[in-house]
Amino acid sequence: MAAKAIRRVGVIGLGKMGRPMSRHLLAKGFEVVGYDVVPAAARKVKALGARIAKSPAEVAAGSDLIIIVVGFDTEVDEVLFGPDGILKGARPGAVVAIAATVAPAYMRALAQKTKGTKVIFLDAPLCRGEPAAEKGTLEVLVGGDKATFEACLPAFRTFSNSIHYLGKLGAGQVGKMVNNLILWACIAANVEGLKLGEKLGVDRAAMRAMLLDSSGQNWALESGAGDRPMPWAEKDMMIVLEEADAA
Image (tube, one colour):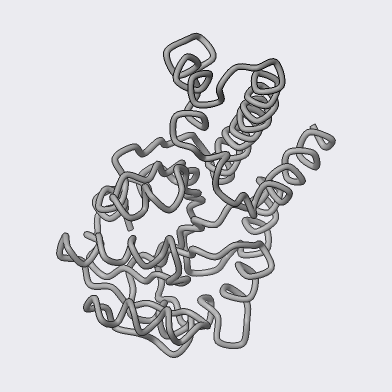
């Protein structure tokens, strides 16, 4: 697989992350075939120039690389193993990159569950969120076969300016898990610190400006991540707790 140039990329999940990722891939000359259970999301990506498939199996049949951009491991399971899933349609040597944030244990179990199948798996979770997806400046954390990773780099570089290969399959999810642990800790500390400052009479905006110029500076404070809805926090921390208990 590593010797074969990847030109046809499937994207499963065409929402706030998958849509801009598809746009960047198309802009760099990749063929994109997409799938989403929400027709409106699919129509938006079709308008960009992508071909829309009727199932994950159809995406896989026409792709060298399939990127799964869904929210939960149950959705990854459905996309992979469902009656019209990727494993039904994938060609030998196709690469499946799981960009969803799942537990490292999920990737370890997946490797055992799919042993002997015709596809090659990478875990490739994404960092920096929706604004970075729009700008094409996502961070991608990758685990899996290194030659396969290198073959996928041109596609990943269309929507990312920071790509880290961390080791064997599952290592990318370990990286994302640790990143999330530190991120949510920073967000919680920012909220509590700014509240404390306000209670003691210091203007919030002035305090924030000071912190951004001090040793308390952090990405969450700078980007305003803690000011936006955080629907994934509980899921991310459950992954941390389960992996930490097992370790």
